[in-house]
Length: 104
Image 1: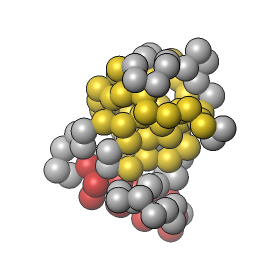
Image 2: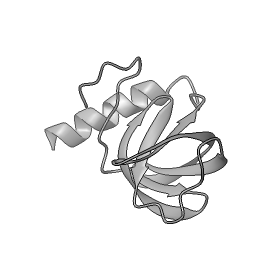
Image 3: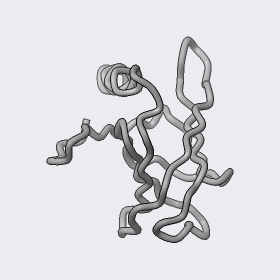
């Protein structure tokens, strides 16, 4: 888990593969309401709506989670994208994945 003063906890999860608008990028961190990604070629402008696909490790396989989001910032570390929490269990799943990765 990343120590941050934001409302939602942010996690540095290497097990999640990420696509933005169908283009691969690196997940810097993820929270229940957004991501920070890097390495995105031709990043969309702030205010642009994008389709975000997170390939999440579930039950021994990677399952795609497609989310509509909006680009909210460009910073040196990457591109920030906010989205509505994709489900009630998403925050719990992020915590579980974080525990799994930090204890490995």
